[in-house]
Length: 68
Image 1 (cartoon, helix red, strand yellow):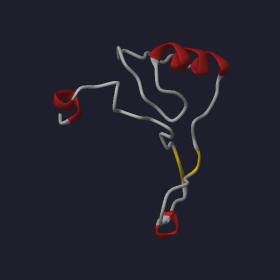
Image 2: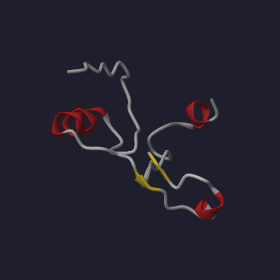
Image 3: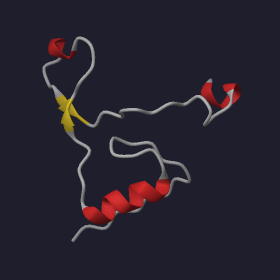
Image 4: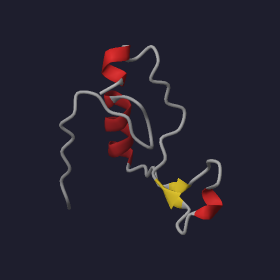
């Protein structure tokens, strides 16, 4: 069995957009890898990956934080 440590205070990933839901997804063994679905994905040689979907940075971060 491999151990994984998530040390971030905030978390955005291919499954969810916050720490509590990330921990739940990890406990359930869910996978965020799947078919990529964005414009011109056909030009890529690989069309699967961990795509972050539905994330809205506005309202979560201020302008200064978003420009880092």
